[in-house]
Structures are given as structure tokens and as C-alpha cells.
Length: 84
Image 1: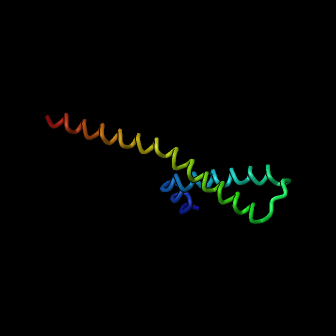
Image 2: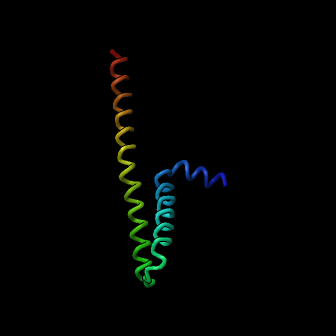
Image 3: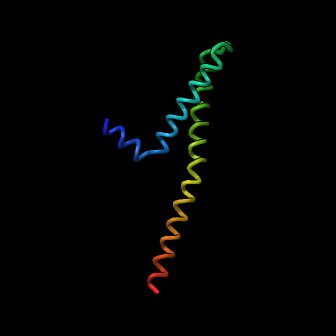
């Protein structure tokens, strides 16, 4: 269990992708259960939904990357000013 928690902490985007994909696919399956889709259509929809979940997590992660870069630049600027 501890190994799983460590993996979750070190890979938050993969974890987010998995959780979001499961949630989105559950909603998809629940809402489309009476539509009459064949197996190939279900597989295609589930794959597409999972990829969309990954894209969402990746796009949301852009903001995290920008914040980290700003913090690093701020830290570098502070180091430069303290040397003078």
C-alpha cells in the first residue's frame, strides 16, 4: 500500500489521468448504456474518452509548469541580487 501511495505522490499527472479517465468512462457507460452501440463502438468511445482525459490533465499541467518556471526565475533573481 505504501508503494502505491509513493507512486501516486511522485506521479500526480498519471494519477490524475487515471482517476479522470475512470470517472469519465463511468459516466460515458452509464449515459450511453441504452443507445445500442456494438462492441467496436464501445471500445472506440472508451479509448477516445481516456485520451481526452489525458489531454485535459496535460493542458491543466501547463499552468503548473508556468508557475514552477516563475518560481525558479524568481529564486535565480534573488540569488543574483544577494551577491551584489
